Amino acid sequence: MSDELNLSNLKPAQARKTRKRIGRGLGSGKGRYSGRGIKGQKSRSGSNKMPAGFEGGQMPIDMRVGKLRGNTSADAMPIGPFRTYNQPVNVGVLDQRFDAGSDVTLDALKEAGLIAKLSVDVKVLGDGELTKKLAVTAHSFSKSAVEKIEAAGGTVTRLREPVERKKKRHKASAPAAEEPEVEAEADAETEAAEPEVPSEDEAPE
Image 1 (cartoon, rainbow, N blue to C red):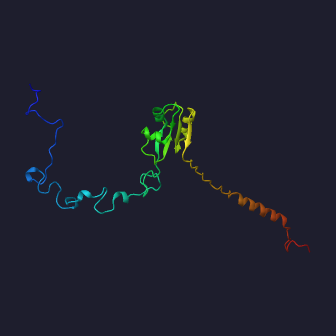
Image 2 (cartoon, rainbow, N blue to C red; image 1 turned 120 degrees about the vertical axis):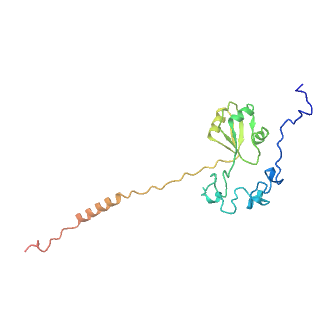
């Protein structure tokens, strides 16, 4: 039988790939320079330890291009993207993982596998639908998450007070077009108040 297992058809479950053997003569296809070419830094030993982005000593591309400053810019230097990080948890996931009337604390979220660690702030977001009454405790909440939790009869407890950002007030500049009109009116009143002095030709004989 062809399906019978014997030495002629014995083979591993997963096919094995032949290892590349270098420096075994010109006939092997990887002899003489072993695929590294002639001279240069990458033909020497230790060339595989160069850091990513290394361009042989010239100014690398990440330092040549312009940078955008700020905490949340993808190429901000030297802070990097997303300096302040929150672990997001959506209300739709809370509705799936917790029973009605449960107290959703940080420890409960950790046990449920919704957050990775307790040392990083947790922010509850409003994606999904919430139909259960839950008492949720977290560091911060989005506006839509608070509305959905309270609409379902639950409560929200903030571990960190929200920071209110002050709006910048622009000073109203005084209109500059009214000043010439005021000066013109003052000149007219001055001329009207001064008496006319007769000239020498008009003086009575």
